[in-house]
Length: 181
Image (cartoon, rainbow, N blue to C red):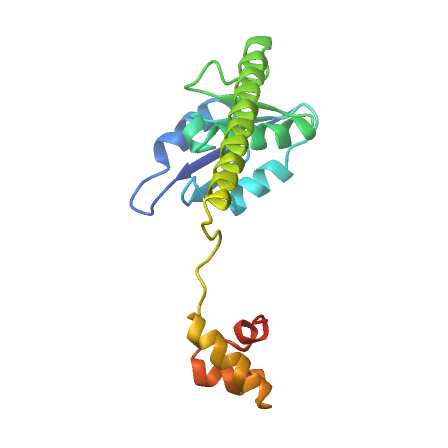
């Protein structure tokens, strides 16, 4: 069993010193360091830290906001940690410690709340789409071409012009022209 540290700051103007000091004092070795926004899900050092976890290891951070920016992100990361047989511990957030029954309970409750929130959002979104369709509103991206340009493209195609030439005339991509029916 080993304690693996993860320290992150958002900009190069910030320093990792305080986090590194706390993680070293907690016995972390190695410590993965990253200078990148926590809103990004493609953090290479976090991926390396998670990949380095083995059964019984603990991933330590100084505070949860150094690890995740949203409940969903936190739950995804803890799922990955659990899948590797490891645990999570945040030094400043005592409740975020999956090495204890209380910490596991709190993260389970958070997971249930996040799932409930996702289902409500999905439901409201589909209701909104249905109302918009019923009201005759167009969903999706606006058309690149006006009705006049669409008619012109169909006329030019009927005259034997290829889609590439029609696209050049209209100032759009060939694939936009090819989708016109």
